[in-house]
Length: 192
Image (cartoon, rainbow, N blue to C red; front, side, top):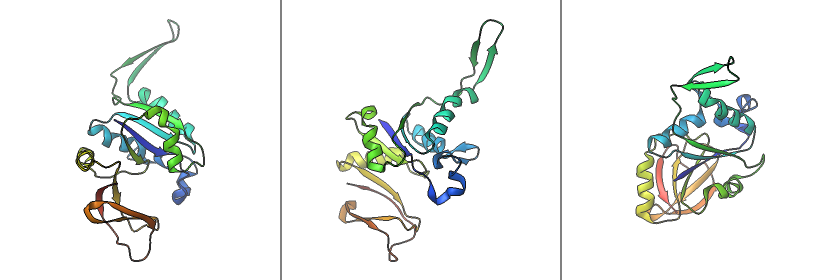
């Protein structure tokens, strides 16, 4: 199963940092947020990623182009042509497809633009800044057990963004803008 990562937005809420690089490339402990997200999915056996890039997408591509070299021991042999010998390969077993989904494309449009890389198979989808303590295996099993078309994991951090209204049996009833009556912190999985 492939994992789609939305990494194309401008990161306007942290513009002092995102003016230099896309938000998913901001570092936590010397590694980009994007890498941490991928490590979480990889821990649960998901290693095929499609990254929906946009804003400063060249920086995401350059980072992955260099990643293998930065995590391995390398010998450059200029005495016999231009040979490169890779020793101690320590990169993760990932397949990473980075797609330029446009500079101003919204979420649904980004997902639609990567369809040719996904096909008709089920997939997982996450935002490029969504690092969380979620048991991906349990979420997938929850999704399969409920037989719905989609399952959503949510954190509510008292932001001024949208709200998901959840009804009986964890079914989404509506999406709306947040108001002052909404709670501060919760985590849940629900099915659509």
